Amino acid sequence: MIKLLFLALVLLALVFLFFANNDPVTLNLMPDVMANAMGMRNELTLPLFLVVTGALVIGIVVGFILEWLREHRFRAEAKTQRRKANELEREVVAAKGRKSDSHDDVLAILEDADAAR
Image 1 (tube, rainbow, N blue to C red):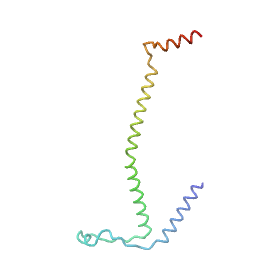
Image 2: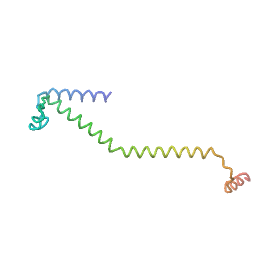
Image 3: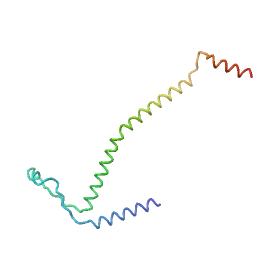
Image 4: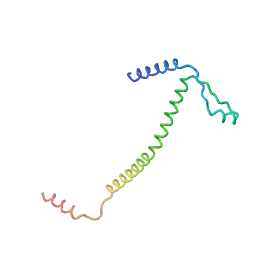
């Protein structure tokens, strides 16, 4: 409930921020010389809150991508370790299920000592 109330307050603050910054701003997409040479329109007029929100969204997405790329080696190492652990577990299960044909002398002595008691 508290989380929902907090999110509602954040949303309300964002709405107030958007209405307070509704003035249009002009963005130059590229230098005038380059735009004229390419025959493209150089300007884009948007409300300020869209420019700020777009910049935040782009920054968050780029940050997530860079972090995902940075953690790739840790995920690869975890996958390798998980594979090794599964292989060792299979070996342990196979070793427990396998009966030894040869009788160990130390175990025989211990079993004889237990039987004598």
